Length: 368
Image (cartoon, rainbow, N blue to C red):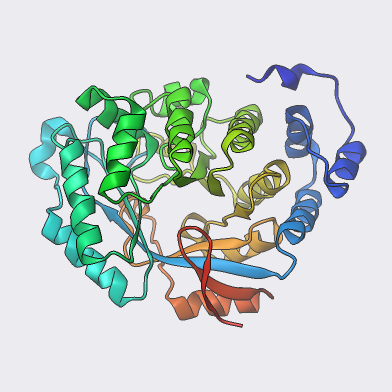
């Protein structure tokens, strides 16, 4: 845990004053807000901070496709209902280049800009598979932004190929990789990772993938999957780690928190965290991450009703109009994928100005 969390208690009124004045809050102050602050207090503060970053009240969304190139995986994460163990790989799949290209063609036909592609950690797939795949995608669809391969996948490739993270990322970038998604972060504390995903990359490895990608001129997102074995101290430690890395590199485009979704997992006994806790953590992330421009609200795990409420708890982005979603759906949770017109209507109804963005949060189409 962070050493700062043992410092003397600071009152809520002083913390509120710091936030209003635009001053950075410490880990201890963040913890006090999370544990002692009322939900509406955090929402009010987060909305105040959001307006500082986005005074025009524009709320963005992206049209993308989430392609899972394989469901065969060796990490056995306890929260995952999607994977097929490698020893049962005959029950799983690996998409061919042609199958991926067909999916990208549909994405382009829908007016999409972003290909989010992640999968299980499959020992049968080496670096050449991804280099070839990315080159073919760029050859046929040069306009598509390839936002793919999370840190655990990249760490595994480096170990499998006996290469450095930098060498792997350089080769992937040369083949067409544009940016790195924040998946695989879960909670960036060793205590929690040792429980939920002990076979995945370490906290430091996750951070180093993003640090290296930023150094190579690539952008990435940061994520957090909470509401399971994590405690408030773990959430603060996670936020502090990514805030510190953003101070160092400035390479993160956005932060995306969401809650664990039970259903067909080894963690189902934990249940689903209440939406009030989701909104509180979302609000705290907007307050704490003073060097992140964009915070995303998750309609996929929270429903659209709560997703738009999140716009008043610090978020300025409503995620994506996904043409495909497989991972959350594997829990038997009914994921309702909105159309562009649904997203526009929901944002307008909430009192904001909707706009479609690309991977880098550039506006590509306004609806106001």
